Structure formats: structure tokens, C-alpha cells
Image (cartoon, rainbow, N blue to C red; front, side, top):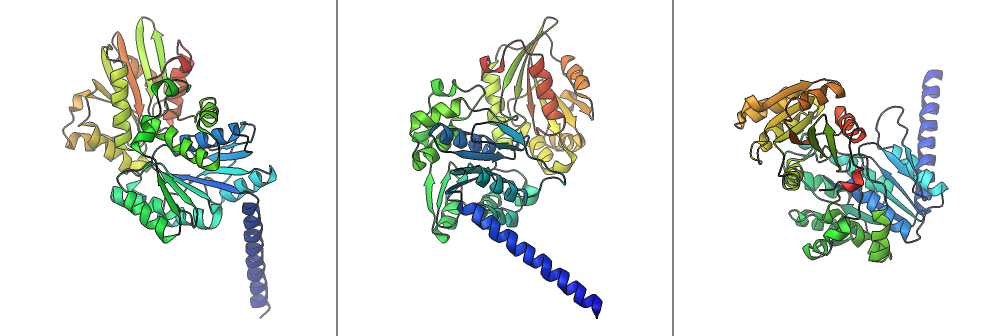
Length: 401
């Protein structure tokens, strides 16, 4: 009997602690009048940074948190700190982020959604963020093993984080009806960034960024900032000076013992559609090279993504060589072979060190080559980016697509 009483006492204690934490968290949320929750398949880390930079430039005390290549907490002065994860990534860390932002008396928190499963996407919004402004960049075929099996299912999963009685901003075109249905159900106003707004972003404005930014991302971030009260000129000025995500698309030129190499970092474009777009941009930017090398960083725990890219890349403008790095490269190769890939063009460099990967690439460059990284930024992907960056002959801000 004493054991049962003890167990009941402990249970009641844990419940009381949970309720107390929930109350404290709700109070911290109430201290943040602007809570902007960013989600989507592609570009959410960039859009999070862009919105935060625009708001800061407009004089709004803003904290931000990204979960992209390297999770970062961005302070009101623009300084960044890594997010400590002693037990790995967990959505509960958003509570710590909210607490930190409240302690800085921030007026705005721009936070990237870190959930994938549909239930956790809803949980992050309904319990952890309770956004005043929701942002969905796009919905594309990625993480189909969790959100799939189709692109429409991905859109439905993302719709789980539509806020209640707030505003939803999106650049997505194909699945607007999914988001509109969720917004109407929750009493939220849906605002779609139009093609005309994207077209207003000029090439001169994009050239002011120190990395390759997409007009859709800038237009979406500007629309959010303008709705909050920061004018376009001010917001854009802040965005151009913002630090890019470590996985942002950059390019680097190398002259290596008479061999000219142009490296494009497209690792963060996880889905086939975005990756193909960047591949086309790279080919157009460097038409004069002798060889074109597509480097796919595979992950055995992202089997679906490897198979998707393996099948899709066969229909793209061809590369001269396909270098496979990371782990589980056979998944990519098998899918590519089934789709009609010439397997004599495939070079396996699985589980190699970054210097060994560079040597493999170097063997296939000829006198000049375009080298583009794709697939995943995690694992050797970021190491490859750093390797080329540290050996480039020009600062990355001087070399843009």
C-alpha cells in the first residue's frame, strides 16, 4: 500500500510540474507580441533569417532561431549562438528558445518549425509557438517517408502549423486550396505572395546579397515585414546585410595547379525540383567549362531522398560525372540505374574523408569543371563546402550565380 501511495505522490508531482511549466511557457509567449512561425519544404531557414533581419532594421527588438544546417539562436544585435542539444534534436527545445527571447524583452520572435511528422507540426504551433504570423514557403516532394506518400500529403502536413486567428503568408502556388481550407477553419487570414511581387525583386537587388538568394524568399519575407510595419526599403537593407545560413547557396572559384574549378553549394536544396532549378542556374552561369560534375551526398537514413534524386536526375540536363559521397550510395545508384542512367558516369566515393573526396573530383575535372554539391548538407556535405571555400581564389561575395 505504501508503494502505491508513493507512486501516486510521484505521479501527482510530475503532473503538477508539467502544469507549472505550461503556465510559465504561456506567460513567456504572452511577453512576445509578434511570434512568426516559419515552415515549408525549401527555404525556411533563409526566410527566417530574412524576416528577422528586416524587422531588426526596422527597429523591432527581434530574436530568431533556425534549425537549418546548424541550429542557431540569433540575438537582437544579430549575433548568433549554437543551440545546445545534449540529447539530440527535440521540439521541446522551442520552450527554451521562447524563454530566452522573453528574457531579452524581445518584441518579435521568428522561429523555424523543426517538426516533420504531421502531429508534431501541429503540436509545435498549437502548444509551443502559438504564432501571430505563420509562414509556409512551399510544399514539395521531400521527407515523403514521414509526410508522404505524395506532394499533396506534404502540403497537408505543413498545414498543421497554420495559426489560429492569425495570418498565414505563403509563396506556394500548387496547393493553395489546402492552406486556405486550414486557414478558414482556424479563423486565419491567408495572404499569398503573387508572381508580380516576386517579379518586383530585381536582379540588382539580389546582387546585393553576399550569397545566392531566391526572389521568392525575399518577396515572401518582405511581405511579412511590410504587414508588421517595416517599409520595403528598410527591410531589404537589413536583409542584404544579414548573415546567411551555413547551408545557403554559394559559389567558389579554385585554380588548382592549372585546373579551374567552379564549385556551387546546392546541398541544402533537398527536393528534386529545387535541386534541378539550381543545377540549371549553375549550367547557365558556367557554360564554358570542359566537364560538369554532380556531387550527390547520400544518407542511409534518408533513403527516400536518395531514391528520389537518383530517379529524377536522369531527366535533367546531363552531367559528365556523378560522384556519390556519404552513406547508402547504392540506393541512389540503383534508382538511377533503373531510370536509365549510364552507370559508367557514376563514381562511388562512399564514406571517404573530405580530402579524398576532393581528389576523386579532381581526377575528373579536366582543365576546367563545374562542380555542384547536391542531396544533403549533413555529414560530408558541409565539409566539402568548407574545403572548397577555404581554397577559393575569390571571396564568396564576389562570385554569385
